[in-house]
Amino acid sequence: MAPNSVKEQRIREITSLYYSRREVQDALFAFSQNREISPSYMMESFGKRPDSFQYRGDIFEMVKKGATSFHCSEELWKNPLEISTDKTKEQLNSLREGWDLVIDIDSKYLDYSKILAEQILKILSFHGVKNIGIKFSGSKGFHIIIPWKAFPKEVNGVQTSDMFPEWPRIILEYISEKTKPLLVKEITSLTTSRSYLKDEESAGKVLPDIVLVSSRHLFRMPYSLHEKTALASAVLSREEIKNFQPRDASPFKIKIRDFLPDSKKNEASELLTSALDWFKESGKDESSVRKEKNFEFKPVKIENLSEKNFPPSIQKILVGIDDGRKRALFILLNLFRSIGMEKDELEKRIYSWNGKNKVPLKEGYVKSQISWSYRNKIVPPPNFSKDYYKGIGIIPTEEELRYKNPVNYVVKKSFKKDEDNKKPRMRK
Image 1: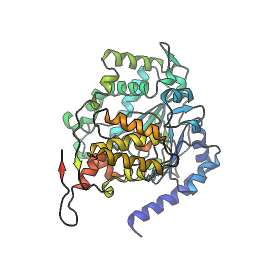
Image 2: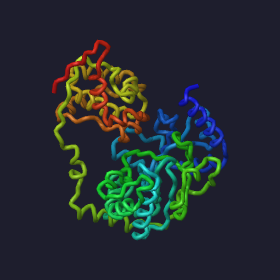
Image 3: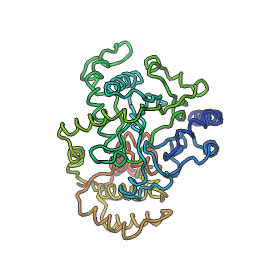
Image 4: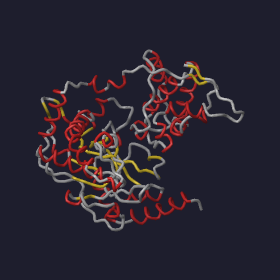
């Protein structure tokens, strides 16, 4: 048996034993209420979206079908099964009851994540936010949650529930800005004997980061396993962060605790208003947030294009999907135009793909999106790290993440030497 197969078999055995525990199922089911959920199958694919747990027993039924971890939305919905990527923002707003603020700390090193978590907790405390949930991500980070109950339901006549993901993103940017100076100082103080960096310039390149949210953003549920580490996403107290070690999250040693604290009503009001004031005073607006899109992209023309050189995620889209068809169409249009595909061929491929979808998009909609695309300048498709892919049930591979963008992947693969040691021609 290959090494990877041995590891996978071990994880599946742990998964079955772990999720058979009644207290684990209860914790997952309780937290899932009013949330969209999605199982992951060895991080190779997500389950169909939208989905939800109707009964506690649904959890182990998914495990028996191969589910190894569970993810859920930050958004709280009246009926999660009614949401869809095909709905307009206004329609989604009418379905959304609210949102929790989840601060997802991503880092190369666990000790860096600990430092950032401590700094964030200080900022939150300064703004009067005392009731906070903390859990281990399962790998090298932490998740911090502030419940919906803690936020004001209206600010200056604007419904807070309608401002997802805009207001959570502003809060996260505000927290990042406030924590960065102390973060650099703390990280540079770590000793070189542990292979950490000391100079401020180098530390700045490997600072832990806060993952910004997007519509229908999912995060690992409390007490879900992590496939790569076989560790549980265990809930911690603030006092446990400093001395926490991954072994403390061993799936058969953890104790079940509530991740969602009983917040006081509106205790996060000052945090939200301070973040909104900071955002306004900094001169930022919607156009400045999106200024990174205002660049001139030069498409690459690839002749003798072969579908085998498309990234695995794109190939999965091309065989047809159930949910997220509009998002998938956006990805394909931008990719095809970015690699210089002629319009006739593009239309042929797009209509062929749409015919493979379980429920095809209306032809008029596809035609209008193609027309709209050609009225605008060419931009590459979203990077693999973006939630566009996870949002339609596709998890990019590690190789894809190294290439960062589908265009890079296609170009690199297409210009490798073929069996005849000939390279396809390229022109810009």
